Length: 265
Image 1 (tube, helix red, strand yellow):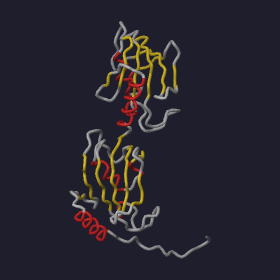
Image 2 (cartoon, helix red, strand yellow; image 1 turned 90 degrees about the vertical axis):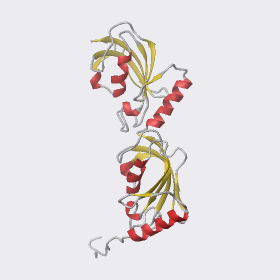
Image 3 (spheres, helix red, strand yellow; image 1 turned 180 degrees about the vertical axis):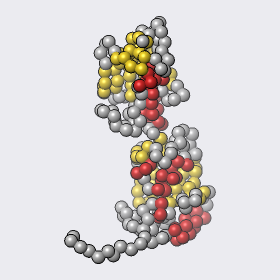
Image 4 (cartoon, helix red, strand yellow; image 1 turned 180 degrees about the horizontal axis):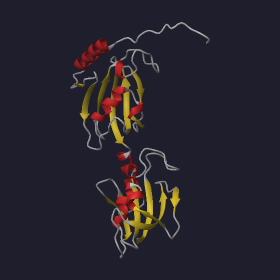
């Protein structure tokens, strides 16, 4: 349009109305809810025992969303949705980090922490939103661990898990020099996903590098072998390339490496 009148109006403040609505819902449903300074209310049914997210974490969350009249407006599958919390409404950015992996509960979110005074995706302006949530995974760690455990069982591997979440299999321990996390090494390898699709492979002569210059799963895992040793490293995304796509490797991927430690240089 070439010109128009500015008929914009300031946003409506629903804070007091939303606060009263949430308090009434809590009372009517006998909820043990806590209030934050922002006006968010949350109920922890299970705190969870796994990793705890921050406001910038990638999370997988199963949810059911509804209004205070219990009319549903959205629901995920049991597998949940995966996204970065920075792309979520403010009530989720603040509320999800109260839980650890495996945790579940309720978020009661006033409009100013959701869609405000505008209608959005069929949700009326000024709406209080209630979410029953279950935090399935943070930075893919719980999902990756389950994927690795299944792969180990399906392939009958004798694997050891470390405190970081790395799994390793020693086929041959080797008899030569043993590297540290700062050593220069030469390693022959084949890298693939749990579906056995190969994403990278060296020659039989291997490649040389310093263990401080590779992914964390290698920095930790290669020193379990001595020169001449071989085996597998099963690496969750937190010890690989994280939540970001890297070359042909999708974000959140479990990486498996068949490795042979040729030499410690």
